[in-house]
Amino acid sequence: MAVAYQTFPVNRTTPLDLPSLVTQLRSTVAPDVGAQPPLNGTIKLKKDGAWTAQQIAAAQIAIDTVTETTPTLRFQRTSREKDMLATCALVVRSRDIAAWNAMTALQKKNAVQAEADVWVNIREFIEANL
Image 1 (cartoon, rainbow, N blue to C red):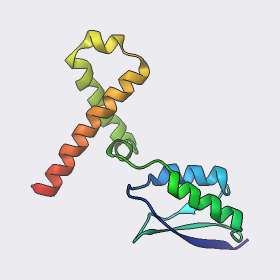
Image 2 (cartoon, one colour):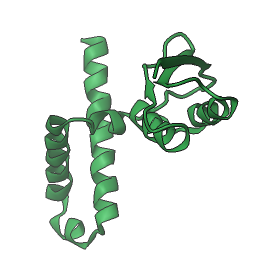
Image 3 (cartoon, rainbow, N blue to C red):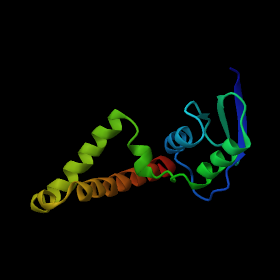
């Protein structure tokens, strides 16, 4: 079966999260969909076989509605980055161990992600200005 490419407009004001998009496309369009990173306001998708009108419409909806990427999402992608998140957890925990122990798992996750966002923003500032 031949691979077919389809280019779609990216009509968003926020950057899309590419891994989330691929996951969504594979559940709504076809299990073999792949995506290139967006470039110049478009994104190129590929899959085996021709694109149907229904698949094109479903893909465009996914592109328009997929989760936006955030520093935290970018930060969580690799094992090394997960080690860094563990360090963020230690920082949050060390501020108030009693409060940490009283938190639910979701509260701990949110606190660690908020700390990670601060660290990523500091890193981006350093890279841009120093």
